[in-house]
Image 1 (cartoon, helix red, strand yellow):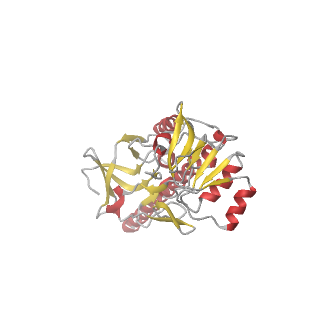
Image 2 (tube, helix red, strand yellow; image 1 turned 60 degrees about the vertical axis):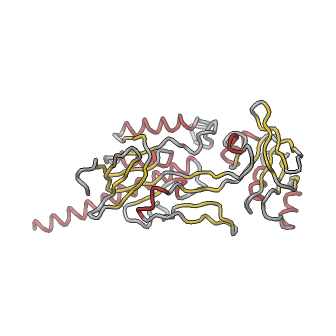
Length: 322
């Protein structure tokens, strides 16, 4: 390791639910840990985080603030900044470079930098994202229950999402848009659940009094809706991982590429020795609680790996003395 670097046991890249949970597990194991976070939480635009047992509907930033305080209580640190590169050092460990020109040395890395939601190219979606332009029935479905909901078809998963939202409201419109043609079986299933199919490309959304009020088609027709379900491309934030040799792979479902992720085993261990991943970096479908769980597991495995390394060194030293 480079003695000139500020050294810690673990650097965690990303201070969301996964990163903070992993860092907390490390800190509670009496290890030094620094979380580097660039303050870009994926769910920042949402009013609240749901299905968080004991904290239902908590504001995303309030949840992160509580997590930071809990981490600090065990001696963990959060450093504001953006990681630009991470490099494995020849003699062991890693150097983590930040955009401000500083660097950190770490024995292990936990990558929890999340993903970017790349929305379909439809006017107005970005401004409403996380409010009344949604993608997950379990994250936001209850909040739009019994209201007019539309589903924008862009992938083969659109029918599945439509079925789930039809459990929450009897008024669902399936916008065929650029999605694949419906099979006879899917068309029959949608009809059986009372879903209306609207053909034609969607070009924008209408907003009235800061609320989504309709979906505009290329024909000029506006279909009244209170919420629109879309499927973003889930792109792992991986530009800072290239030097490690970690390359995002495609997330494929039903023959369609839904995004990218960093591959790992069930504990979060990657193909690069000493590097773990957690949360949306490796599981784009993970919600807040499952991201917390993966962070906790990865943090525990990082500590176990360090204990094993230290034990090998102690055994070798004892044998040398003998």
